[in-house]
Length: 399
Image (cartoon, rainbow, N blue to C red):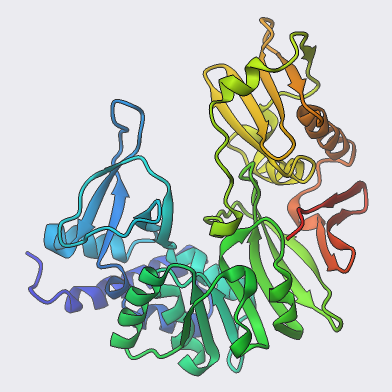
């Protein structure tokens, strides 16, 4: 039986989580291990959702609410698991006193799995004496980890959702942490506390926000996730130079974050309506959509690369058909089976979307299929471009 006071079990569970992370090679730094063993994650997640194993009758994910009142043991165990805990859907704040089961929905806030939070702080080379801007306070747990390591005076954290920040602030202050907190849009950073030694974003952007470069000291570093409307992701660690330029290599791995709300993909209606307007004569494809949709690290990487060629396109599969829709130019492409195990495509509008995708795939194959760590992102007055010695430059969308 669980004790009335969860704090006793929380101490044990924190230690077990730290031990597990260390055993998996994810917590090598003794200073960060001490931080994990100290910060009480459960105080930052009074309620969250966990998915059922099976979808509902409509194929939607069933999300079960978890709170101490509903099941204290499950709540504590999940809080100290290496799991992302969803705390909000579609921008709507749940009533955690009487939470309801959810079917489907788009997560808009969460407590990121601890191993990824620690990986971010480590990849950004955050250490004693640094001033840090964190974009995306969320529940406040990652903010607390930074405060425990750096001291609250070195940490600024901003959050676009005022209700989220209010709850995070309450939890942080109750635990004795007093970072600078502000309701602000991560696209613009936070000038009152600039300049920073490190900027770390817990959301993704279509391109590097210029304000973040301007608010980072020369020699300082920016760690963020780049994404796009094809939901291709890449992490990049930039070093800022004099004159407001920055460059850095892409990092390996398959990490994804929720988009900054201003960079989220727009809705585009019924893909069948777009497909109905396409020319009637299809052509055979050189590359099928599985090149970018397969559940592999290479496909994850390729999806990021090809969206540079079609930055305003979105992809959706309906039955056997795969649709690309570009709401900005009014272009579309539909790929359907050709009956012989391959695909054919119909394209319409001013941009031949799949032809552009195929050109990137052709160049990628010809270059020997280079991994993400071989690409460098350059940010300067001419724009933002991914560079590789054997590939054409790939531009990012205008920030």
